[in-house]
Image (cartoon, rainbow, N blue to C red; front, side):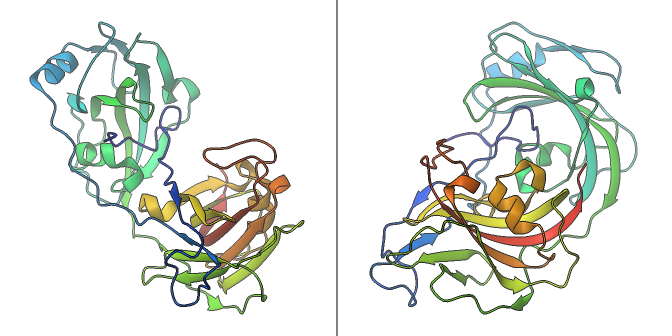
Length: 328
């Protein structure tokens, strides 16, 4: 079992992609014909409890020396290679103010070092770009339990296993605590639109999670297909914005290669930093919409293999557009 990791420590942590292969004609509901390819998204799993650190883990983390004033990048020193068997935490400095609760927007600075040799992997102090997120966001599940109940100014030391199974040492400091946020939408709720005949079809679970059925013999289009399925009443999205979305991505053979639904929460990213099919397909749509995209390979990853996606693959996406704002 891989340890959970903070998806938000952008320089060092990657979100897990759910790779699930669905065979042609597999359980896709009554609407699927025998030769259709059915792409079912793996539902988000309930997080398993973190393993408890051993006495040796606690001793190893207690031996890490962290110096420097709160508010400044700390100096972190330890004997290498550092070895631990489970995520291990230590409060270095306690802040002041009211304890933080779930759904509070907080801003953090952090520095990450490689356990193998002590080299720095990333530092928001160095880049001048603190990171902001909402406590309770599933993408930050390794940090949530440690930071809820703490206060602004708290500094925490963490040793954990990254997705590549290397040991990392992280110092996280809560630099600012904002307001408690109202939970945002988790699915599109627009007016239904009748799609063109012959396209992949989408069935929604009660919570909005999509299942995509790709008709037998469906041929990849030469041009990008943009088919609204639900039309939202929000503002029009522009290609220079950052969007918040729920999405599922499939290959034409029914393989689910990525899904925010599988990770248990919407995700946000700038439209200037995604494949052209997304930039061209989402810009011009309205917030609250759900859109089916059929992306030809030349507007996806072209002749490059990418995270389980074979080279020259056309891609099918279902995208719920939940929000859009100016890129940071």
